[in-house]
Length: 137
Image 1 (tube, rainbow, N blue to C red):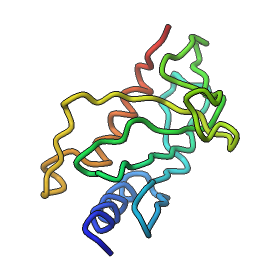
Image 2 (image 1 turned 30 degrees about the vertical axis):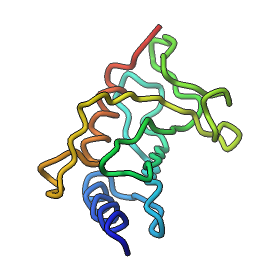
Image 3 (image 1 turned 90 degrees about the vertical axis):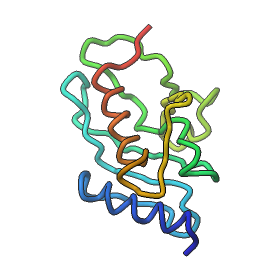
Image 4 (image 1 turned 120 degrees about the vertical axis):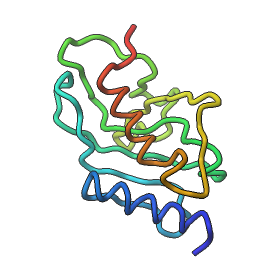
């Protein structure tokens, strides 16, 4: 394994300690999947399938967003911004995924010490915060 793949593998172990079943690309380290990512009570579903694609420059560059099951709905029924079920921004629409766009601007600070800098666990904490207070129209 290369340095990047080792880093992703270590981060997957960290994610698995929190979320249980975590799958990933163990060859290139290009994606991580959490099949039952928990959603807060303000959503119709209790969980969603979560896919995070990692840029080739990860961990120095953060993910640009994540994919979820299509059909996510809040209990209040409000429209969610930066969430795309169709294929205009979503390359996996035909596979049943929806795209949730996230813009991390200058706030991503990775470190050689996994727990001192930003990592996938912190990214999933950001995702949980987004689900707790989804951006709406």
